[in-house]
Length: 606
Image (tube, rainbow, N blue to C red; front, side, top):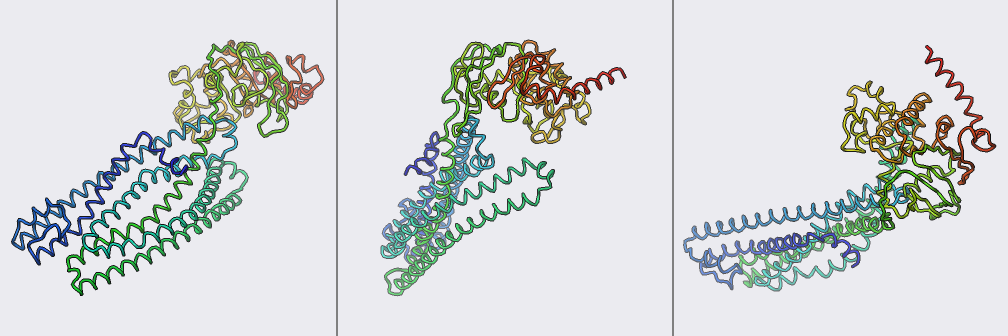
């Protein structure tokens, strides 16, 4: 019952549309139950012109209208005319019913999909790091469609099934109660079989959804990483991996389909036997004079209303099982706690004075701290570089500053504890450029200006020039209107990083973070961008995470991280003379820089 309530709570805000659809469905089934009676009336009228309500259970106003005609031709024409009018009214009602149900499904789908998408956007960074995007895509698309299709369509069809049985039984009772009970005899058998079938198919559909999700994950990974697959000539392995997942999905689907076939085949066999029994009984009653031809013909037409709807119960159970599984998968996402549940309330003016005091961090399922008692200070307007080995905690510090994770200790920005500041507010005031930035499948201009919708052409060109991108853009066929492709696939790694740098400059944020964002650039371009940034961003606090000493040496302050601790803080001149990690790195990279600067000077002379 909890799972069923979970399904139907989706109707919130559309309950009146749902009730209207139910009314139309009931009206449609009720009016359909009278259609066979027109045939019964016509036959009786041709045999005996005095047809009463006890002979045919048509509405009184229709009988009164038809009984005014005495001529056989008039009776036939009038009956056909009334039946045609009746059917037209039914079809109009059916059309409205279909429109209402369609609108209901789309309303519920839209509300659910937007709500689910919004909730996913508000989930924690940790959640997104541990979830497969292919699985999420399936939940937001096909699972939503499966769920809403049942709620808005199949659930109403189930009510229609009950209405059909009820009105069909009502009409059949007036013709022959015995035939009615024979027609309904299969319902208890069907009910027991359906309950057994539901519990079996529900488990199988869960496995089918899991296997389909695994296939979606593999497809999504390969589409996103097409370059990598080709670069390693790994197509054969990836095809084999997909084949393995797809085969598991196929086998599970076939197993479920076999169960469906057994259930439907068995039900069809029982119903055919039942239909045959009704036909034989009708023929027997007609031969004995218990029923006339008109009653037998209408009974055979009505028996379909009592037998065939039960067959549709199998499809409804199928859809119900799928909807419950899909709903569970959707509800699992809604049950994930939003990261804004524990959020600050302050929105102070951000200038960029950052202090880390005894800051430690470890993942909830981790045993060791990635950061252990970190202490440092960054003054407003300073440019600070973080240097350290891979895994030393450089990027983790940035994630803590952006409130992607919670922390132990104290982090203050301009004297206010970071936990007291709204997460979205602090993120709006910190511009971050990652090593592998994400670009949209839009033009270069749109990718740069997306950070600030009010930006003008001059500002975009200025930002591109500072990011050393202007010359590259001039070589593009369509210049700034060149579409970069999904995730910027048409650009080189360095061009993608420079587009991201230009985008951050457009956003005009008081704190800038470059998380190894110059790694794909050559030394000359790296130097040109750093000089332009230094000249342009005198009032901005800039944090640079890098492995290059040449990038770090010209900053105001260098913070050296080693195994989750601050090993040293100072300038290039002081750290390069002090024993430790920085001196070792400088010993390796220093000679390369001297050679590079020598080549630059020679190039300038030429």
